[in-house]
Every structure is written in C-alpha cells, then in structure tokens.
Amino acid sequence: MDREEIICHCMSVSRGVIEDAIKADGLKTVDEVGNATGAGTGCGGCQDTIQEILDEING
Ligand code: FES
Image (cartoon, rainbow, N blue to C red; front, side, top):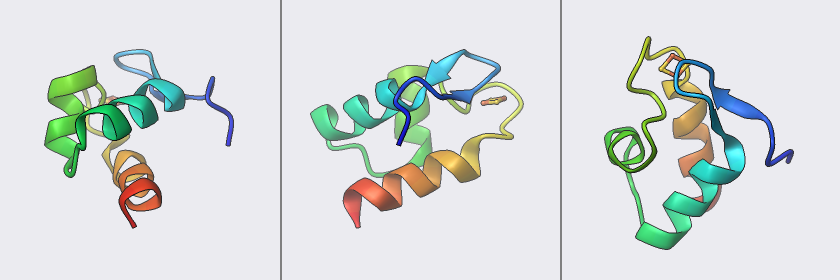
C-alpha cells in the first residue's frame, strides 16, 4: 500500500496518516478517524475507503 496516497481529498489526508492514527489510538470507527485526522469530515466520499482501512488493520 502507498502510504502517500491521498485518501481524503477534502482534508488532504494520506493513507499513512490514517493508518498511524488507527494503530496509535486504537480507532474503531470512521467517526473516530474523522475526529483524530479530519479525514471523512468534508464531502464524506472517502468514508468507504476509510472503513476499508479500518477493516484491514482491525480485521
Ligand atoms: S474526500 Fe474525504 S471528506 Fe471528501
């Protein structure tokens, strides 16, 4: 996976930032990722991808 890939274009949040926040803070939900990183708090169009990242990390 490309950690530099921008997942949330509204807030310019990369995959790596999202992955690190999930791992560091034990995030479980899209809302929690939004609170921690801002990702998903604009148009909402990236929320499915954020969920996929959550599923990849949390299983
Ligand atoms: S692309 Fe993430 S909120 Fe719009």
